[in-house]
Every structure is written in structure tokens, then in C-alpha cells.
Length: 213
Image 1: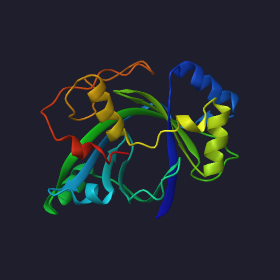
Image 2: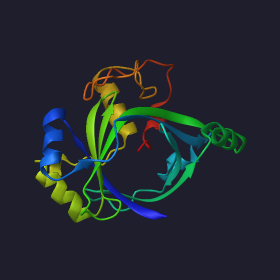
Image 3: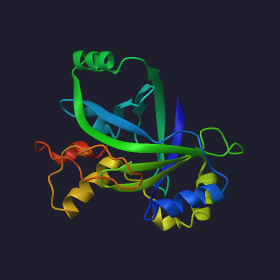
Image 4: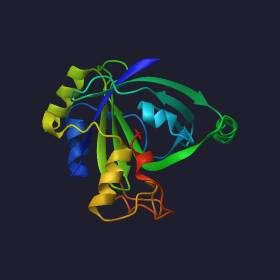
């Protein structure tokens, strides 16, 4: 169990942003990889109502089951208790959760590239996320460190985003007058920084989108 502190930053020029990360001493610690996320909840949406989530994340070489508690405080940082376990069989976990009465409430996908500096604190990391609704930088670490990194990249605190990807997706759908379904790609994206449009799917209630992290 640990306390997660993070923000998102909008990326308008992916190439320039990557160059700036290198200028600040960050080095890529992972190749760009595809990531699929599924949020599980009960039929009455107990977790969402409590501001919590249970996420099953599938990456090329690992599967992670993560619980996140309600947001702590209301400042410019997103702070939550996080418990995470590395698993070996996503299908088995899905089956277990199903027997417990849980189903997938929301799916979202992204391509992620992770950056770090050897001199930074543990768990301090920058993730370059290409999503179906745009490119974002997720900055996680101590609050002062986040401020330092954001300032070095040319961002002001007013540009910090604490909304989940679910909320961002819901806002994108409203702005583009599209149905809110799952935030997934129509096709796999080959070129970094060029996300495709979200794939259409059957209509679902917007309320399920608000917890996605």
C-alpha cells in the first residue's frame, strides 16, 4: 500500500515535449507499448459511488490488478491510496471477479512510454500517454518534484489536470457530440503522437466513466 500523487499535462507538440524531457535529463525506461485497462465494479456501482476503483491492466509482459481509494484532499494534485499486485493470468482474474459479482464497467486503451531520472526519488516517473482522445503526460512523484518537472517542461500549475481518463473521455465525447462508450482505438496506432478516433460501441450510461485513472 502506498499513496499515489500525480497530475496529467496536455501535450500539444509531442516531438518538442520528448526533446524537452531529454534536455531535463530524463531517459526512456520502456519502449512504447500498448496498454489495455478494464475497470470492474458491482452492479450497483459501489466502488464508483465511494470514489474508488478496481483496475485490471494488461501490458505486453505483465498484468496488474490495482485498487485505488477515494481522492485525498482537493488541491492541484491527485492523491489517492493505491494497492497494486502483479499477476500472471488476466483471464483467470476476470473469471474470479465475475464470480464475485463484478463486471467490466469501463475500458480504456493507450500507448505508453515511461521516462525516469536515476537521481529522482523512488516512484517518481513521467509517462507519455497516447490515447484515442489526445496525448497526455502523466507525472507521478512527490509534490515538489512534480512542480519542478512541470515547470521545467514549461507548464504552469493552472494547466495541471487531476481528472481521470474517464472524465476526460466524457468531456471529449460531449465536445464532439459522440456517444460515450469505451475509450478504445479503432485501429492500432503505429506512429507516436497520432492517436486515432475512439471506436464506436453500444451506448452505456455516462456515470460509469468517472473513475477511470
